Image 1 (cartoon, protein in one colour):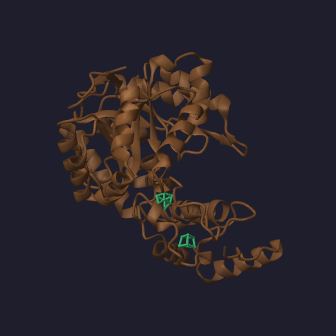
Image 2 (spheres, protein in one colour):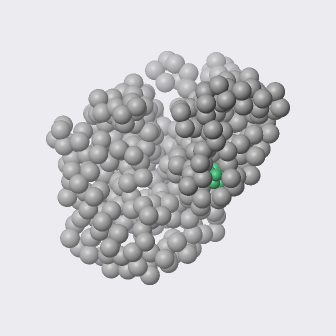
Image 3 (cartoon, rainbow, N blue to C red):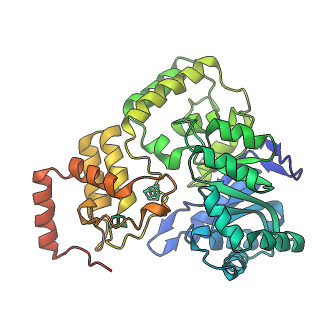
Length: 409
Ligand code: SF4
Ligand code: SF4
């Protein structure tokens, strides 16, 4: 494993971090056996940065349990986050933090972030509640190691936030689909001058793997087949490997978070991390990304990463499911998108509804880190995925199942 130095603290951080947002799940919650296997495989491979959050259901508990059970807490850095959208009063700082310590089975959080800061105003609100003094006391006691923020807003606000507080690190979304989105390359470059920058969504929530159009996959495949790029243990790079290498090519990225879903993926990504470094991409490879980016962005209609922060919807609309199927209908084809729509959007469970049930109340939109105008986007989804014959079919099936529209709450 390669490590990059946290220029603020001197800590050695593994260039590959484990994103703990999407551990494998069963109907009952996180599949602890699989989650533990992933966590321990990462530890064995030298990964020492584990990123979780209050907002990731069950994740802090799973991470805490696995680290304690295997007695490896002191070998890793835990990063977790204050759910600022839920903070209403000063007492909430301690309420969330103390619960997070319990969930994580630890007495300190090494890297603690204000989760989902979008603009200076949201930080000023926290300051008005006294977050400065609260952070100072937690750092003094050692309960918080380093303090940072994760950013989900638009361009200029990132720079204002950087200047608003003596942050010790930050976390931004960054991948090859759009290097100017949110903080973007300018934000990354500026922040990296004074602090480590943690990269999230290097694969856009998996969309740069599962949502890649055939044409884009073919561009990657041909580039490998023609020997224009190196291979990993004799095998051509997967789309995921392409995505991760693009970020590791940049010296400003301290840790790249990957939400690995099984130990084999951990092994592959760790091996990839060993052979990826700033400047590892040739001009030919950069041209491959340019061509893939063009194809992908033409198909990626709604920039939803499937994070689920907009859920639950009071009208029980399956928002990320609708957007995933809609994007698939452009990336892979309408029939495949429709199959996905029928199984994962319109009828996921007894109480899951398609876009037709949206009342445009707007309750979801303030929670979306991608700033998607959700109600309007759902209208576009309905138009494409529910042409009149499909609408009739859905009405008939719903009638047969005896399902009505969700009640207003
Ligand atoms: S705007 Fe539509 S999708 Fe969003 S919370 Fe309201 S009803 Fe649900
Ligand atoms: S619509 Fe926004 S909040 Fe909801 S899942 Fe997609 S990206 Fe996340």
